[in-house]
Amino acid sequence: AKEVRKILANKKLAIARADHLIVISESVKKDLIEYYSVTDKKITVVYLGNSVKTRNKTDRMTMLKSLPSSYLLFVGNREGYKKFLFAIRALCEVLREHDHLHIICTGKGFSTEETDLFRELGISERMHHHFASDDELSGLYSNARAFIYPSQYEGFGMPIIEAMSNGCPVIMSNTSSFPEIGGDAGSYFDPENGDALRTAVTECLDDDHVRSELVRKGYERSGLFSWEKTVIETADVYRNVLKSHKK
Image 1 (cartoon, rainbow, N blue to C red):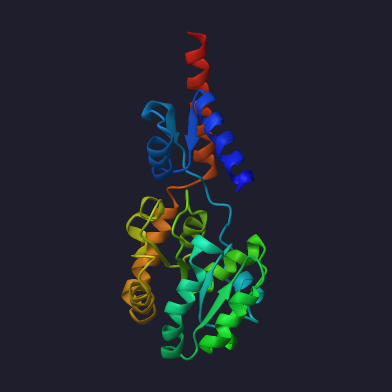
Image 2 (tube, one colour):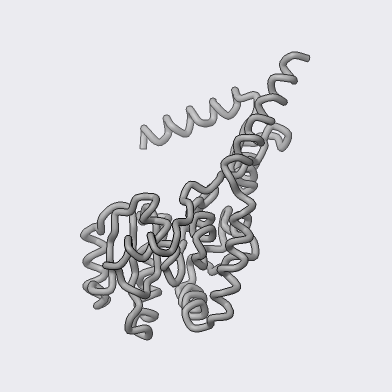
């Protein structure tokens, strides 16, 4: 607790001393204004880009031939506010209704708490962990039935753009920066409502039109984000700050 207080104090001091702040979403900007009393003019939003490039279909199939043919995908950390355990409890019913559906997770290996829950729910054989490189991650996105993102809060949510750029439907929380980044290309649910998550996933699995529209819109949406754009807009902020100092 002492270390956390120190980090927060240092962060507050850094924010107060900064000439200008670059943030990765309007959601973060809103938080800075609300919790740190920063003025609107001192903040510029610069979105992040996408580092997981799409691979060709042949490469993807070779890379993933040992994985289940039908699966939902979780990417990254799964602790606490990421709401992974909540999502698994909600989705175990969907797994029972879809005999050949599995769940693949990247990031750290499964914890004892996670494996105990899988055993309790009777879904251990349907849960898989895969340490993935960026190339493998592209393949995982491309072949997934959907990418599930139940986190309660993210400043940006880079996996949203990664998934969309690789033709993977995104089913995500309706909180923090998610609607801002995903726009109309995502399927949203309340991260406190298991029924809402089940409904969104089932619709994506069972309705080909819904799924194809999410894929189509996702490709379009992901095209709005690039590291080139990030660099240009970041450089503009620096130039403007330098100009203000010369006056």
